[in-house]
Image 1 (cartoon, rainbow, N blue to C red):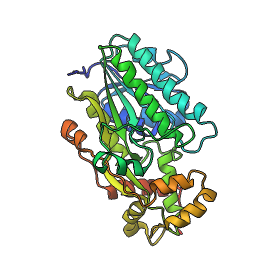
Image 2 (spheres, helix red, strand yellow):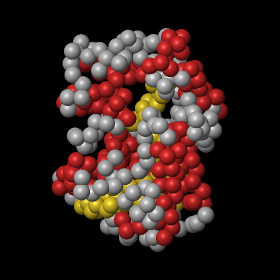
Image 3 (cartoon, rainbow, N blue to C red):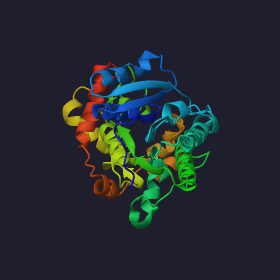
Image 4 (cartoon, one colour):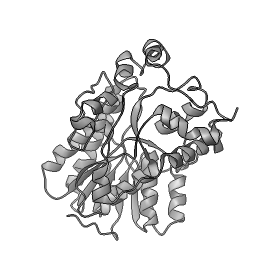
Length: 355
Protein backbone atom coordinates (compact mmCIF):
# COMPACT_ATOMS: atom_id res chain seq x y z
CA UNK A 1 0.00 0.00 0.00
CA UNK A 2 1.53 3.27 -1.13
CA UNK A 3 0.08 6.51 0.15
CA UNK A 4 1.03 9.52 -1.99
CA UNK A 5 1.21 12.94 -0.34
CA UNK A 6 -0.76 15.41 -2.50
CA UNK A 7 1.21 18.38 -1.16
CA UNK A 8 4.32 17.07 -2.94
CA UNK A 9 4.95 17.72 -6.64
CA UNK A 10 4.20 15.01 -9.22
CA UNK A 11 6.46 14.48 -12.22
CA UNK A 12 5.21 13.67 -15.73
CA UNK A 13 7.62 12.72 -18.53
CA UNK A 14 6.69 13.76 -22.08
CA UNK A 15 4.16 16.05 -20.40
CA UNK A 16 2.95 17.72 -23.61
CA UNK A 17 2.02 14.47 -25.37
CA UNK A 18 -1.52 13.54 -26.40
CA UNK A 19 -2.28 11.36 -23.36
CA UNK A 20 0.11 13.14 -20.98
CA UNK A 21 -1.52 16.54 -21.54
CA UNK A 22 -4.82 15.22 -20.18
CA UNK A 23 -3.01 13.59 -17.24
CA UNK A 24 -1.35 16.94 -16.45
CA UNK A 25 -4.75 18.70 -16.64
CA UNK A 26 -6.28 16.13 -14.28
CA UNK A 27 -3.45 16.65 -11.76
CA UNK A 28 -3.72 20.45 -12.01
CA UNK A 29 -7.51 20.33 -11.55
CA UNK A 30 -6.85 18.42 -8.34
CA UNK A 31 -4.71 21.36 -7.17
CA UNK A 32 -1.38 19.56 -7.45
CA UNK A 33 2.01 20.91 -8.49
CA UNK A 34 3.19 19.24 -11.70
CA UNK A 35 6.83 18.96 -12.73
CA UNK A 36 6.39 18.76 -16.49
CA UNK A 37 9.39 17.25 -18.27
CA UNK A 38 9.39 18.13 -21.99
CA UNK A 39 11.96 18.26 -24.75
CA UNK A 40 11.64 21.99 -25.34
CA UNK A 41 9.90 24.08 -22.64
CA UNK A 42 10.38 27.23 -24.76
CA UNK A 43 8.24 26.00 -27.68
CA UNK A 44 4.90 27.61 -26.84
CA UNK A 45 3.14 25.71 -29.64
CA UNK A 46 3.86 22.59 -27.63
CA UNK A 47 3.31 23.83 -24.05
CA UNK A 48 0.92 26.82 -24.10
CA UNK A 49 -2.10 24.53 -23.62
CA UNK A 50 -0.53 23.26 -20.38
CA UNK A 51 0.17 26.81 -19.16
CA UNK A 52 -3.50 27.62 -19.91
CA UNK A 53 -4.65 24.50 -18.06
CA UNK A 54 -2.60 25.56 -15.02
CA UNK A 55 -3.98 29.11 -15.14
CA UNK A 56 -7.53 27.73 -15.15
CA UNK A 57 -6.93 25.39 -12.21
CA UNK A 58 -5.94 25.38 -8.54
CA UNK A 59 -2.67 23.67 -9.47
CA UNK A 60 0.76 24.84 -10.50
CA UNK A 61 3.09 23.77 -13.31
CA UNK A 62 6.87 23.92 -13.55
CA UNK A 63 8.63 22.97 -16.79
CA UNK A 64 11.89 21.03 -17.03
CA UNK A 65 13.90 20.36 -20.17
CA UNK A 66 14.51 16.62 -20.54
CA UNK A 67 15.15 14.14 -23.33
CA UNK A 68 14.52 10.39 -23.19
CA UNK A 69 17.99 9.47 -24.43
CA UNK A 70 20.01 11.87 -22.24
CA UNK A 71 21.21 10.01 -19.12
CA UNK A 72 20.08 11.69 -15.90
CA UNK A 73 17.89 14.18 -17.78
CA UNK A 74 14.92 13.59 -15.45
CA UNK A 75 16.73 13.69 -12.10
CA UNK A 76 16.21 17.42 -11.51
CA UNK A 77 12.51 17.30 -12.39
CA UNK A 78 12.01 14.37 -10.01
CA UNK A 79 13.36 16.10 -6.89
CA UNK A 80 10.83 16.05 -4.06
CA UNK A 81 8.31 13.96 -6.02
CA UNK A 82 6.73 10.85 -4.50
CA UNK A 83 4.86 9.99 -7.70
CA UNK A 84 6.29 9.77 -11.22
CA UNK A 85 4.26 9.28 -14.40
CA UNK A 86 6.36 7.94 -17.26
CA UNK A 87 4.37 8.58 -20.43
CA UNK A 88 7.10 9.64 -22.87
CA UNK A 89 7.47 7.08 -25.66
CA UNK A 90 7.30 7.31 -29.45
CA UNK A 91 4.02 6.16 -31.03
CA UNK A 92 4.35 5.78 -34.75
CA UNK A 93 3.59 2.99 -37.16
CA UNK A 94 5.51 4.37 -40.14
CA UNK A 95 9.21 4.33 -39.36
CA UNK A 96 12.32 3.80 -41.48
CA UNK A 97 14.59 2.51 -38.71
CA UNK A 98 12.52 0.80 -35.99
CA UNK A 99 15.52 0.16 -33.73
CA UNK A 100 16.49 3.83 -33.70
CA UNK A 101 13.02 5.39 -33.87
CA UNK A 102 11.02 3.03 -31.65
CA UNK A 103 13.03 0.48 -29.67
CA UNK A 104 15.83 2.74 -28.40
CA UNK A 105 13.64 5.62 -27.16
CA UNK A 106 11.12 3.25 -25.55
CA UNK A 107 13.62 0.88 -23.93
CA UNK A 108 16.52 3.21 -23.13
CA UNK A 109 14.08 5.97 -22.19
CA UNK A 110 12.38 3.74 -19.62
CA UNK A 111 15.76 2.65 -18.27
CA UNK A 112 16.91 6.28 -18.09
CA UNK A 113 13.80 7.46 -16.19
CA UNK A 114 13.96 4.53 -13.76
CA UNK A 115 17.69 5.04 -13.14
CA UNK A 116 16.73 8.52 -11.92
CA UNK A 117 13.91 7.02 -9.82
CA UNK A 118 16.52 4.77 -8.19
CA UNK A 119 18.63 7.84 -7.37
CA UNK A 120 15.87 10.13 -6.07
CA UNK A 121 14.95 8.91 -2.59
CA UNK A 122 11.58 10.67 -2.41
CA UNK A 123 9.92 8.56 -5.16
CA UNK A 124 7.47 5.94 -3.86
CA UNK A 125 5.47 5.01 -6.97
CA UNK A 126 5.95 4.99 -10.73
CA UNK A 127 2.94 4.80 -13.04
CA UNK A 128 4.16 3.66 -16.45
CA UNK A 129 2.10 4.35 -19.57
CA UNK A 130 2.32 1.00 -21.28
CA UNK A 131 -0.03 -0.40 -23.88
CA UNK A 132 -2.16 -3.36 -24.81
CA UNK A 133 0.57 -3.68 -27.46
CA UNK A 134 2.70 -5.17 -24.66
CA UNK A 135 -0.03 -7.84 -24.31
CA UNK A 136 -0.77 -8.66 -27.96
CA UNK A 137 0.40 -7.95 -31.52
CA UNK A 138 -2.54 -8.95 -33.72
CA UNK A 139 -6.23 -9.56 -33.09
CA UNK A 140 -5.56 -13.29 -33.66
CA UNK A 141 -3.50 -13.24 -30.43
CA UNK A 142 -6.66 -12.47 -28.47
CA UNK A 143 -8.42 -15.41 -30.10
CA UNK A 144 -5.45 -17.61 -29.14
CA UNK A 145 -5.28 -16.26 -25.56
CA UNK A 146 -6.67 -18.45 -22.74
CA UNK A 147 -10.46 -18.34 -23.04
CA UNK A 148 -10.16 -16.10 -26.12
CA UNK A 149 -9.71 -12.99 -23.97
CA UNK A 150 -6.70 -10.82 -23.15
CA UNK A 151 -6.00 -10.37 -19.45
CA UNK A 152 -3.19 -8.73 -17.49
CA UNK A 153 -1.44 -12.12 -17.26
CA UNK A 154 -0.84 -12.26 -21.02
CA UNK A 155 2.37 -10.92 -22.62
CA UNK A 156 3.08 -10.15 -26.24
CA UNK A 157 5.25 -12.93 -27.70
CA UNK A 158 4.52 -12.49 -31.42
CA UNK A 159 6.02 -9.08 -32.34
CA UNK A 160 9.62 -8.48 -33.38
CA UNK A 161 11.89 -5.83 -34.84
CA UNK A 162 10.73 -6.96 -38.30
CA UNK A 163 7.01 -7.43 -37.58
CA UNK A 164 4.99 -4.80 -35.66
CA UNK A 165 8.06 -3.11 -34.11
CA UNK A 166 5.87 -0.62 -32.21
CA UNK A 167 4.30 -3.48 -30.23
CA UNK A 168 7.76 -4.94 -29.74
CA UNK A 169 9.04 -1.62 -28.35
CA UNK A 170 6.19 -1.39 -25.82
CA UNK A 171 6.75 -4.99 -24.73
CA UNK A 172 10.50 -4.56 -24.20
CA UNK A 173 10.03 -1.25 -22.37
CA UNK A 174 7.43 -2.62 -19.96
CA UNK A 175 9.47 -5.77 -19.31
CA UNK A 176 12.49 -3.57 -18.52
CA UNK A 177 10.37 -1.52 -16.09
CA UNK A 178 9.26 -4.65 -14.18
CA UNK A 179 12.80 -6.01 -14.17
CA UNK A 180 14.14 -2.77 -12.63
CA UNK A 181 11.22 -2.57 -10.18
CA UNK A 182 11.91 -6.06 -8.86
CA UNK A 183 15.55 -5.23 -8.06
CA UNK A 184 14.59 -2.80 -5.28
CA UNK A 185 11.85 -2.31 -2.68
CA UNK A 186 11.47 1.47 -2.22
CA UNK A 187 9.15 2.26 -5.14
CA UNK A 188 6.28 0.28 -6.58
CA UNK A 189 5.25 0.10 -10.23
CA UNK A 190 1.79 0.28 -11.76
CA UNK A 191 1.27 0.05 -15.53
CA UNK A 192 -1.63 1.37 -17.58
CA UNK A 193 -2.01 -0.92 -20.61
CA UNK A 194 -4.28 1.04 -22.92
CA UNK A 195 -5.81 0.02 -26.21
CA UNK A 196 -6.20 2.48 -29.13
CA UNK A 197 -6.70 5.90 -27.56
CA UNK A 198 -9.16 8.25 -29.28
CA UNK A 199 -10.79 11.49 -28.16
CA UNK A 200 -10.06 15.20 -28.49
CA UNK A 201 -6.58 16.72 -28.20
CA UNK A 202 -6.03 19.14 -25.33
CA UNK A 203 -3.61 21.11 -27.50
CA UNK A 204 -5.66 22.86 -30.24
CA UNK A 205 -2.53 23.34 -32.38
CA UNK A 206 -1.78 19.64 -32.47
CA UNK A 207 -3.58 17.26 -34.82
CA UNK A 208 -0.66 15.10 -35.87
CA UNK A 209 -0.96 12.29 -33.31
CA UNK A 210 -1.54 8.77 -34.63
CA UNK A 211 -5.04 8.98 -33.09
CA UNK A 212 -5.83 12.14 -35.07
CA UNK A 213 -4.47 10.49 -38.23
CA UNK A 214 -6.84 7.55 -37.75
CA UNK A 215 -9.81 9.88 -37.24
CA UNK A 216 -8.84 11.83 -40.37
CA UNK A 217 -9.05 8.60 -42.40
CA UNK A 218 -12.75 8.39 -41.55
CA UNK A 219 -13.44 11.93 -42.71
CA UNK A 220 -11.18 12.54 -45.69
CA UNK A 221 -12.44 9.82 -48.01
CA UNK A 222 -9.73 7.22 -47.44
CA UNK A 223 -12.41 4.80 -46.26
CA UNK A 224 -15.29 5.81 -48.49
CA UNK A 225 -15.31 2.41 -50.22
CA UNK A 226 -15.46 0.69 -46.87
CA UNK A 227 -13.30 0.01 -43.83
CA UNK A 228 -11.23 -3.02 -42.89
CA UNK A 229 -13.10 -4.97 -40.22
CA UNK A 230 -10.07 -5.05 -37.94
CA UNK A 231 -10.66 -6.13 -34.37
CA UNK A 232 -9.29 -3.72 -31.75
CA UNK A 233 -9.94 -2.06 -28.43
CA UNK A 234 -10.71 1.65 -28.04
CA UNK A 235 -10.60 3.94 -25.01
CA UNK A 236 -11.19 7.68 -24.54
CA UNK A 237 -8.11 9.79 -23.81
CA UNK A 238 -9.93 11.52 -20.93
CA UNK A 239 -10.68 8.13 -19.35
CA UNK A 240 -7.03 7.15 -19.81
CA UNK A 241 -6.01 10.27 -17.87
CA UNK A 242 -8.45 9.38 -15.10
CA UNK A 243 -7.06 5.82 -15.01
CA UNK A 244 -3.54 7.21 -14.58
CA UNK A 245 -4.73 9.52 -11.81
CA UNK A 246 -6.38 6.67 -9.92
CA UNK A 247 -3.41 4.37 -10.46
CA UNK A 248 -1.21 7.01 -8.83
CA UNK A 249 -3.37 7.85 -5.85
CA UNK A 250 -5.12 4.57 -4.99
CA UNK A 251 -2.88 3.08 -2.26
CA UNK A 252 -3.84 -0.52 -3.18
CA UNK A 253 -3.20 -0.12 -6.93
CA UNK A 254 -0.80 -2.81 -8.14
CA UNK A 255 0.47 -4.51 -11.26
CA UNK A 256 -0.89 -4.03 -14.77
CA UNK A 257 -4.26 -2.57 -15.73
CA UNK A 258 -5.89 -3.19 -19.10
CA UNK A 259 -7.38 0.23 -19.89
CA UNK A 260 -9.80 -0.38 -22.73
CA UNK A 261 -13.47 0.56 -22.91
CA UNK A 262 -14.80 -1.12 -26.04
CA UNK A 263 -14.04 -4.30 -27.99
CA UNK A 264 -14.71 -3.02 -31.49
CA UNK A 265 -13.45 -2.65 -35.09
CA UNK A 266 -13.08 0.03 -37.78
CA UNK A 267 -16.48 -0.65 -39.37
CA UNK A 268 -18.22 -0.25 -36.01
CA UNK A 269 -16.29 3.00 -35.34
CA UNK A 270 -17.47 4.44 -38.66
CA UNK A 271 -21.06 3.34 -37.94
CA UNK A 272 -21.06 5.37 -34.70
CA UNK A 273 -20.33 8.56 -36.70
CA UNK A 274 -22.90 7.96 -39.46
CA UNK A 275 -26.04 9.35 -37.77
CA UNK A 276 -24.48 12.77 -37.08
CA UNK A 277 -21.95 13.13 -39.93
CA UNK A 278 -22.94 10.61 -42.62
CA UNK A 279 -24.59 13.09 -44.98
CA UNK A 280 -21.60 15.48 -45.01
CA UNK A 281 -18.56 13.20 -44.93
CA UNK A 282 -17.48 10.10 -46.93
CA UNK A 283 -17.67 7.76 -43.93
CA UNK A 284 -17.31 3.99 -44.39
CA UNK A 285 -20.67 2.21 -44.53
CA UNK A 286 -19.49 -1.34 -45.06
CA UNK A 287 -16.60 -3.72 -44.49
CA UNK A 288 -14.01 -4.23 -47.21
CA UNK A 289 -13.72 -7.89 -48.21
CA UNK A 290 -10.72 -9.63 -46.72
CA UNK A 291 -9.58 -11.03 -50.09
CA UNK A 292 -9.51 -7.51 -51.52
CA UNK A 293 -7.30 -6.32 -48.66
CA UNK A 294 -5.03 -9.35 -49.14
CA UNK A 295 -4.53 -8.39 -52.78
CA UNK A 296 -4.41 -4.59 -52.66
CA UNK A 297 -3.59 -3.84 -49.01
CA UNK A 298 0.19 -4.19 -49.38
CA UNK A 299 0.16 -1.82 -52.39
CA UNK A 300 -1.84 0.88 -50.59
CA UNK A 301 -0.03 0.76 -47.26
CA UNK A 302 3.02 -1.31 -46.40
CA UNK A 303 1.58 -1.92 -42.93
CA UNK A 304 -1.17 -3.94 -44.56
CA UNK A 305 1.06 -6.88 -45.32
CA UNK A 306 -0.68 -10.17 -46.08
CA UNK A 307 0.30 -11.50 -42.69
CA UNK A 308 -1.19 -8.42 -40.99
CA UNK A 309 -4.45 -8.68 -42.96
CA UNK A 310 -4.69 -12.41 -42.24
CA UNK A 311 -4.16 -11.90 -38.49
CA UNK A 312 -6.40 -8.84 -37.98
CA UNK A 313 -9.16 -8.48 -40.56
CA UNK A 314 -12.47 -10.19 -39.68
CA UNK A 315 -10.83 -11.31 -36.42
CA UNK A 316 -12.59 -10.25 -33.20
CA UNK A 317 -10.64 -8.53 -30.41
CA UNK A 318 -11.52 -9.16 -26.79
CA UNK A 319 -9.94 -7.82 -23.62
CA UNK A 320 -11.09 -8.14 -20.02
CA UNK A 321 -11.21 -4.71 -18.32
CA UNK A 322 -12.73 -6.00 -15.07
CA UNK A 323 -9.56 -5.49 -13.00
CA UNK A 324 -9.43 -1.71 -13.47
CA UNK A 325 -13.18 -1.41 -12.86
CA UNK A 326 -12.95 -3.49 -9.70
CA UNK A 327 -9.71 -2.16 -8.19
CA UNK A 328 -9.70 1.48 -9.37
CA UNK A 329 -13.45 1.99 -9.73
CA UNK A 330 -13.10 3.04 -13.37
CA UNK A 331 -16.10 3.61 -15.61
CA UNK A 332 -15.74 4.42 -19.31
CA UNK A 333 -17.60 6.89 -21.49
CA UNK A 334 -19.67 5.67 -24.45
CA UNK A 335 -17.99 5.16 -27.83
CA UNK A 336 -20.35 7.68 -29.44
CA UNK A 337 -19.06 10.49 -27.20
CA UNK A 338 -15.41 9.62 -27.89
CA UNK A 339 -15.88 9.37 -31.66
CA UNK A 340 -18.03 12.48 -32.05
CA UNK A 341 -15.75 14.63 -29.86
CA UNK A 342 -12.66 13.48 -31.83
CA UNK A 343 -14.30 14.01 -35.20
CA UNK A 344 -15.79 17.39 -34.30
CA UNK A 345 -12.42 18.65 -33.13
CA UNK A 346 -10.85 17.82 -36.51
CA UNK A 347 -13.72 19.63 -38.27
CA UNK A 348 -13.34 22.69 -36.03
CA UNK A 349 -9.62 22.81 -36.77
CA UNK A 350 -10.11 22.45 -40.51
CA UNK A 351 -8.24 19.13 -40.61
CA UNK A 352 -11.21 17.56 -42.43
CA UNK A 353 -13.82 19.36 -44.52
CA UNK A 354 -17.44 18.56 -45.33
CA UNK A 355 -18.15 17.58 -48.92
